[in-house]
Image: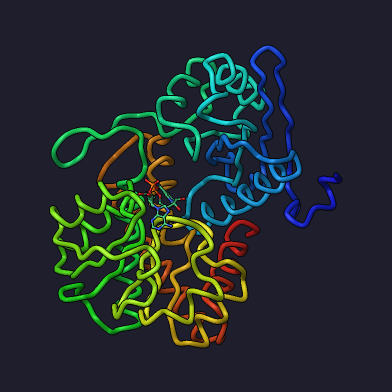
Length: 349
Ligand code: NAD
């Protein structure tokens, strides 16, 4: 395996392989680009089938963080880390400690946050051994305090983004009476659905977790549908908040929604699916632009948390999307491609 020649290497500044015999740690930290600031990105723990798969994943994800942070006007670069192993059976305090020390050795070039397979509690534990972890500070909310979990901020950003997309595509200033299909009512999806309900939208939801569905039905008056039925509903907006690659050859032909705007990462199975959506007149809000609320939240935690400043910053997602939509229309290009071009202009400036 040659890391340098991998397609996803894409000019990474630094890729560090870390191991610790005693705890069984095998991890990779990737710093894609630090021209705007230290590389911040989640730490994923996953039982990768091979080292090559882990390398590919960390490279792809860290590059994505460079684009996301640049687009969100953050003084952050892009990075990511992966720990190879099963988080249920192989995660131990010793392993997290060894990994935290590896992060500390990078002197702040990489800052870790929670991701699949790691939690806020893991980050808090690691913070005893390195100062370069984020997403660990409790924050004031309207009615109390919330943990470092960035999901509420992500959900608010997606809500702001849906308003932008609805204005651009449907010419509507309000969400009152809007029909929205939400795929996945987990941390982000449920919060988003609650905000949409509050704004007067009608909701259709799906999930594979029946308890979450029942909560959405009872508390939000949402209509529950089977997972496969969510794509073809006669709605205005489809909001993917569950999995990646949900916009593909099978699902796109089913879509009746004129807008796709949701929290999931990597929604397009392949870049060509962005072209397909454009051809069908469906406005796609690029995933990393609309779901940036979480990283904005984590950034504000590091620079001194101020709730008003945070909300103002997340509200910029609206303007970012409007800029992308206008330019995509003018240049007759898919929105995802235009988003990449704008992000590149920002981090190579
Ligand atoms: P989550 O795990 O809390 O919620 C995801 C939900 O999707 C779960 O309830 C799960 O049961 C459901 N689901 C899984 N497979 C499904 C299927 N086939 N059909 C329907 N539902 C299914 O995760 P989350 O934190 O809410 O994140 C949702 C998405 O947003 C993920 O793709 C995540 O990467 C992305 N994202 C999250 C954040 C954040 O701050 N949490 C930030 C950026 C992006």
